[in-house]
Length: 290
Image 1 (cartoon, helix red, strand yellow):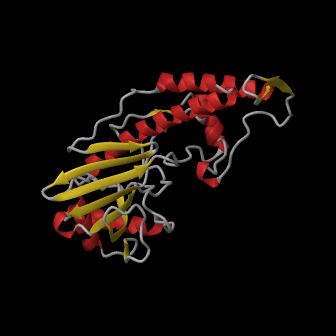
Image 2: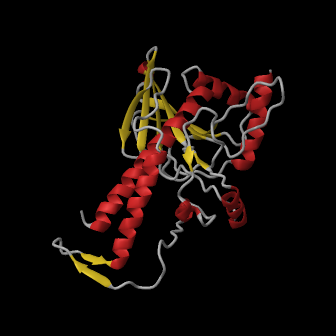
């Protein structure tokens, strides 16, 4: 009963927080931060240049790394490309940034997922696969835009810097769960899940609330990477709490529960940091023409 009441409150919170989904939702993008999980491997916040504006990465805002004064060309190397003093300063900055990110990188190996999940990676896209009693469960997510803006006001930012406080970066991506039965292989039951912005509080003696939520549920063609709008989609923002409770239990019985969600955040955080360092290295090579 306590578990159902907690999820009933969670359903009410979802009504005010869930936003309209985009046309293609195989791998949803931005997701607001829940909190730094107690067991998650997090790293200090170092991307101040990208987060000085509270619009965040998803707004399209791109801050200027240097002053707007034009810098004269420094010449050209054997590659035939243009090289300016600005390029040199940019390259030096990137070299320093890469060194700092490597220092705070917890481990070069990715954390393991418990429960027998097999990991498949394709750049920023991650897939977890598990087979249980004739069913195949696939969880996919993308680390792009999974880091929410951490500073909402410049005043707060200044106060934190004065106190020497460091923000932790935690990746909280939307993720899709696809359940396929062998006897009904033509269609899969697909859950579009996310980490809500605010965790539902619970009092002493109450069971801990779910740290992730189901946004939408639909039957989709098995193995299809795109969400078909022709298939009926059940939105959970106004769903009966009892039905929602059964849907969450359905996922938990297949290994997608709070423990899984917490480990997914750890994995996503590590993958995002790994891809960020690789991007800086590629960017530095491009600027320096190496």
